[in-house]
Image 1 (cartoon, rainbow, N blue to C red):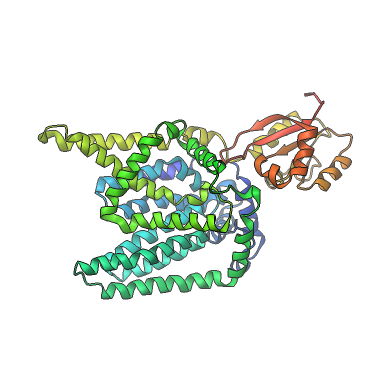
Image 2: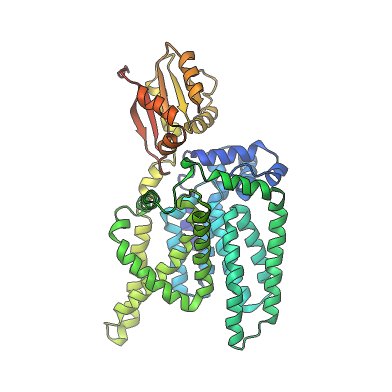
Amino acid sequence: MALITLLAAALRFYRLDTDLWIDEIGSFQYATSVTVAELFRTFSSPNQHLLNSLLERLSVAALGEHDWTVRLPAALFGIATVPAMYWLARPIMRGWQSLAVAFLTAVSYHHIWFSQNARGYSGYLLFSVLSTAALYRLALTGQRRWVAAYATSGVLALSSLIIAAFVIMAHVILVPFFILYRHRDAQPVALTIRRLFLAFGITALLSLAIYGPTAIELLRVVGTAYVREGTGFRPISLEFVRETLRGLGAGFGSLALVGAVPFLVLVAVGTLSLLRRGWLIVLTFVLALGMMAAVVVIAGWLTSPRFFILVVPLAFLVAVESLGLVARLVSRLVAEPRRQRVHGVLAGAAVVVCAVALAFGLPRYYRIPKQSFRATIAAFTARAKPGDALVAVYQADRGFDYYTRRLGLAGDGRFYSTRTVNGFDSLGTALAGRRVYLATTFERAFRVESPDLWKRVEDGWTPIESFPATIGYGEITLWQPKGVGNRE
């Protein structure tokens, strides 16, 4: 387990200093623009992930402002999730299976991506896993120490991302059935029930203390943020399916499509098998994801696949169970003296193959930043002549404003930004006679949220260079006016 955790740390610290993408920048800028008290008193944006904001401030204050220091809290939470997954799996799976679950988490492209994303998702995963593991032990043994473990991890999960409320609700719904099941088996449950009430009560009170002052504002912000077309996808739509497949394809490549059908069969078999031993754990993730999906559909909100990242721990538990079942089935074809050894070899080989598939996209991921702001700025400065200017349009403004400041270029009169048609036209007048380039990103959101401004760009400018990204639609494009040739 120690070696697996060291591997996880190496994979998450490597290239931690690549460019931040605009949501990371926005979260960090808000976290450092207000006081700590204001972080607790206000909820102005869904990008406000309380625990991550507090730890970002601490990290940057202690180590200076760098891309890696902004991401350090998320990376540490991601590393800690690896042994946490072992701890989650151990009561319901064999030792080698629990290690395999941790190993798959350690090498997973998608988990590494979120561990290097300076937002609350890796903390949300970590503390959702820890709270579920603590709850299982508390419901099983009634021991007092699991009360504090559950309350602490539950509150930290909610402080990481408010959608952890679905995990807590799933716990509250499922635990009575677990206790009833144990009572029918003549197990003593009275003390356990009292301690479960205590654990849920402490979690509720602390959560209310944290979010109570901002509850009305939180509901208003969440209720209005995810109805704008550019903020996500309709959950029941072909576009949402395509975006999900794109995300899977980034990690698995063509394997995501080739192995889809057999994978789904294995998932069904593995889930049914795991439910027999650990239904409280399995159904926690299933129910939380189901409730979240139902709320999004009923409320008519737009969403994104990343909001359903809670599927990651469930997927690894089920995958290892499925691989073990297949290995056991095949090993039965071998005579008894060698059956156990063959089963071990087959199960180990299957886990390695699965790990290779999970890490398939890592070489490309490490080459390409989430968004390539510094490379775009370097490309502009390399091709620009004296007097040339770059205008970052629409959402590109946040990244260029941030990195030109960091690189000491903000005051040299070459970099400008705007999000409005009026601002764009005013810059056109102010920069008349100078050669101007544009930079754009997130073109899907740009088209639907600011069609008039997008039409200005599309009608009057032509793309000349594009810089890839690992965030969906995050490519950055450089444009020049139509009819103007490259005059390098």
